[in-house]
Structure formats: structure tokens, C-alpha cells
Image (cartoon, rainbow, N blue to C red):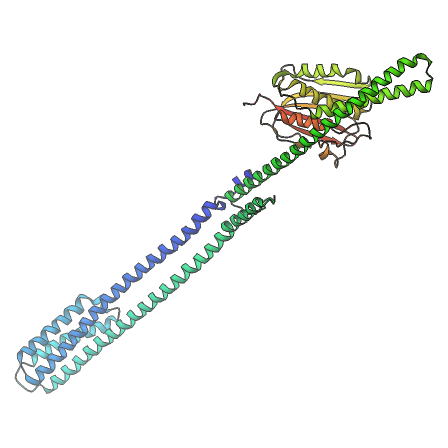
Length: 488
């Protein structure tokens, strides 16, 4: 899962999602701010144009005012003021022709400029002697046209400015609506992709704190969420294992105490039975019948079998000190086979493949007991004929193909393989073979402690066991022990 999450696109990262969300908001705010600045600049230019238009309109009104004063009182100062305002109007129109072009056609502006020039010339002509009634009418008409044009420009300027303000207001409201909508969308997106998985994880942690061991199942594609989910599930798995081991250890401790007491209680009567049987056999001597001889032999045989069972129970219940040492693996296997050589039928072929250089760090007595139990099970599975293979090698930490793994394997593995071609183990039984007192043998043929003790020994050494088996094809046990002595 970690490898798959590592190759996801960068945008699937939780960090990049948050950066992307805030980046989108920042880009929108910056874009809207730039647009607002540009719009305000245009509005500033529009206001400046409005000031020029208003100034031109004011000048034209002053022109008409002094025109009327001159016609009423025929005073030269009024004429001079009139001509001065005409000059200002002509200068303003010439200096800001492009600005005025935004409110009327170039032909119309040129016509107004000509009207101002004609108006100024006609006002100068009024100072000549004679009747100027006709000229005065023309001047009034020309002045009216100039004022009318100025008022039209001023009205157009106010309309454009009002349209600019309305557009700016509309954009401002729209921008706020877009920002709010984007915040809602990004917030919902982040809540769905970030907050919701974290909330589910919080609920799962609360459930774990309440005693419910439910694994977290999240489908978020973010590497951080996936890693956090895997870490949480790993911790939960380890917690389940530790809890199971604790419960199992408590049960086994109580069971060991019980078995120790029962074994000791049984040992005394069994000793008395065995002693009484020997005394009876010696007292009767050769005068006993065949039936009596058979009964005494059965009593003695069953007594010894019961004592072996008691000894197994005591071995299980006894807590011996663990003594670690470096052991030559080939010599250990050879010594173990020599001790049980009498139990190996002649029809069983032994195949040993263990390099002389391999050494294992552990308790010799415990490892030998594990080998005894596994070899004994293999001999039982072969039923007097077949092949028993014992091999050893350094192996990869990955489990063997098609094998069921039990326990936590170390990083550097020394693998001991014990393989037989016997009847095999059914798939539904395989997961339970290391449970205490679980056995597939007939009643009276075994206690079901052999493989359990093997698992305890391997786990005590910091290793694990893998099993591969199928009915009719045989069984292979892989004891995977640390290749180096662990550091205390």
C-alpha cells in the first residue's frame, strides 16, 4: 500500500490539496483586486473627464452671462470678460480634444470650436459703430448652440460615470458572491477529502479507546491519510496481537500451574502402581499363567505411558532459565537424530542438507526439543515409509511461497526446513495446529502439546514458523530464526 501511495500524482497529496485550495482563493482575490484597481483607474479618468466637461460648461455659462450684460449695458469690461472666457473655452477644447471626443463625434467638436471662433469674431465686431441687431441675434443663437453642446456633453459624462459606478457595484457584488461560493466549494471539498477521513479516524480511535478493535477502512487517495490509516491499522493489529498474547499468557500460566499440580499428584500413584507391578511379577515368578503375564505387561506398559504423559505435562509447565549460546546447526541436528535413531524405521529415507558453517544463537536444549517434536510428527505422518528431509539456509525475510506464517519474523533469517511426504494437513486444520491441546491423532496417541511447545520455543528465540501442507503431498515446516544474536 505504501508503494502504491508513493506513485500517486503529486496533487493527490493532502498538503498539495490544502495549498491548491488556498492558492485558488488567493489567485481569485488577487485577480479581483487587480480588476478593481483597473476599474478604479478608469473611474478616476472618467471623473477627471467629468471635471473638464463641467469646467467647459461653467465657462460657456459665464460667456453667456457676460454676453447678456454687454447687450444690456454695452460696457467694455463685460465684453473683455466675455472674450476671456471664450479664449479659455477654446483653449480647453483644443488641449483636451481627445477627452471631449469620448462624448461626441469629432465633426461635432470641430463645429463647436468653429462656433467659438465665429462667436469671438462677432463679439469683436460689435464694437464698431452701427446697428448690430442682426449680429446680436446670430451671437445669441451661436452662444445657445455652444451651451447646448456643453450641457449635452455634461449629461453624457454623468450618464457614463453612473454606468461606470453601476458596473463597478455589480462587479463588487459579483466578486463577493464568487469568493463566498469558492470558499464554500473549497471548504466542502477539503471537508470531504481531509476533515471527514480525519473525523472517521478520530471516531475509530474513540472506539478503540472504548475497547472495540475495529480496523479503519478509508478510501482517501491522499498519501498522508493512507499512511496514517496504515499506521493506525498496524498499531491496532499490534495491539490485538499483544492483547491476545497477554490473554494467552495468562491462560497458559494458569494452565501450567494446574498441570504442574495434577502431574505431581499423578506421579506418586503411578510410581506406586509401577513398583507394585514389578513386585508382583517378581513374587509370582515363572508360575504365572500366560493371561497373568499379559495383564502384568499391560499394566507396566500403560503405567510407563502414563508416566511419559506426566513428564510431558511437567516439561510444559516447567519454567527453565533460557541460556543462549552459538550452536553449530549441523552438529545439533546430527546429535538430535542420533538420540531418536531407534525410533526411525528402516523404510524412511533421511536427507540432510545443512552447511557446516551455519550457526544459530539460542538455547540448545530448547532447540533440540523443537527438533524432536517436529521430527516425531514427521515420522508419524510418514507411517513407517517415505522421505524425511532436513535442510538449512540463510533466507530472505519474505515468507516462503504458499506457506502460512505464524509469529513475527526477524529481518535476517536463518531457515531450518523439515519436510516429509506423508499424508499432509487439511487446509481448515492448518491455522490451528499450534494451539495447545489441539491434535488430529487418535485419542490416546498424543496430547496436542508438541507443536505448541515448538511455537513457544521459536517465539522465545525471536523467530517465526511457516507451514506449507496439503493432503496427500506432505508437510513442510520452516523454522525461521534470527541469523545473528540479538542485541540486548
